[in-house]
Length: 155
Image (cartoon, rainbow, N blue to C red):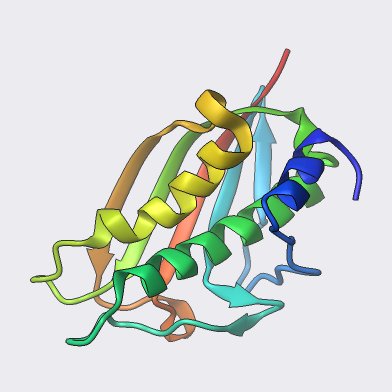
């Protein structure tokens, strides 16, 4: 590992996945100006889904937050791959979260808090961001959660 952000990940006991393969014809992220737009990542590890939706009757919200944290780790992997270093990131601008759940499930935002909290834990106030969190009927590979993000680079 190298860099300040990766050292912070280690302090938090977090490990980036060894890979985050794409499931379709899209880039993991794209830089325009000083912004990095990251494609959505599902709760998988090295291409193998780990948490499945939709939310059921006995759903444990902590499981959902763990799935969202896994999505965030995949986003960080992609950010490093596209930008060359996570130390280029000066702040998290926006996060979008999707939870496979029935229309009556009202805890989607609490699930996506797993990703949001990770970014705050890593970058402090610079990790606070605008966010959307919605329920959807299904996600790729039957995943429980998908998260995308926009990061800004320092000048």
